[in-house]
Amino acid sequence: MTTKKKILIVTDAWRPQINGVVRSLERLAEELGKLDFEVVMLTPQSFRTAPCPTYPEIRLSLTTPGTIRRRIEAEAPDYIHIATEGPLGIMARRAALDRGGCGFTSSYHTRFPEYVVSRWPFVPIGPIRRWLKRFHNAALACMVATESLARELTSHGHDNLTFWSRGVDTTLYHPREGLDDVYVDLPRPIFLNVGRVAVEKNLEGFLALDLPGTKVVIGDGPARAALEARYPAARFLGAKIGEDLARHYAAADVFVFPSLTDTFGNVIIEALASGVPVAAFPVMGPIDILGGTRAGALSEDLREASLAALALDRADAARRAADFSWEGSTRQFVTAIEAAQDKRRAQEESRRGSLVRSGVSSLIRR
Image 1 (cartoon, rainbow, N blue to C red):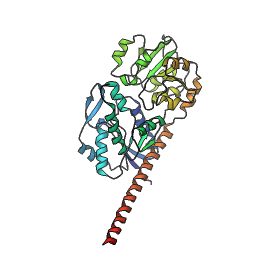
Image 2: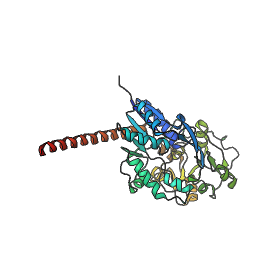
Image 3: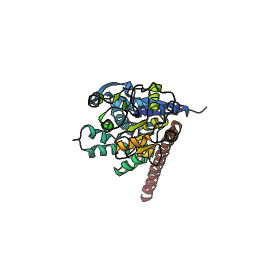
Image 4: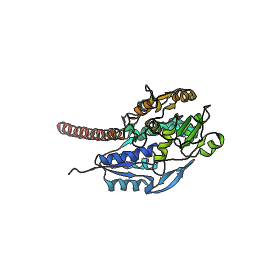
């Protein structure tokens, strides 16, 4: 009987948050189980928490490095993956480096420097980028979802990058018929956005557009009240999940993605899988997913892109989504963590060889 390999995944982003990081890690854990891994999640749910300043929906773990070190030692994982750079990620990184053993891999989900500057423009971005470089360069490998992100991080001095793309659940998100009840009484076309309602998502870049029909926002977050007051013609439907969310995707005419700071955009491939063309700026994430396809429209003029997306074939959108499966994504993740361990073992053998050669040289000199 094959012994399951244990992987410890450390994340500061977890339920009840609803975002791309949480959804990706939930599905990754599920798919790893199918590949005969034992998955242990280290999340804020295990600790007392405090609200994140300016974003109380995000809870920050209140614990100590010693507690995290003991948790890791008790689990004795074969692999450690640190998914976020929050309090848990920082303490787990420290524990993994002090512990030696299997080392750790990390992933770069969020353009954290750009998020910070979008909230506090007076904060210098350089020191944040340098800190993130130190954080991730200590990993055996840092996983990124797109070529664009790899190029950007390489330009900032990251030197251990590998790829881990994302997937979409096409059993839930798929083209549907008979959805006349979803946006009942709302003028068509429906231009939809789904995601966190926060300043870094650049929702005003969508809501301020002069478009026909109705602009609809699904999601919640700290900017919702202010945006609802400023754009009364738009419809804010709050957070939705599961079948309800899938029906709202599939009933829309165009999905508008105004973000300038995302590294990928899981919601883009959810919309595509639902048969909904996407309009976006030609930036990281959208350009990696939509560039060179007929599944969406990219333009520096988001209104132009939104109107162009109306004319696209919904079948092309669904076909592009088929390139993103969770099974393929998970196998890519497994390849990355196993290659990282091969790298660690090679480094250890090289160090041992150096010590042996050094000892032999010392004896000869004597």
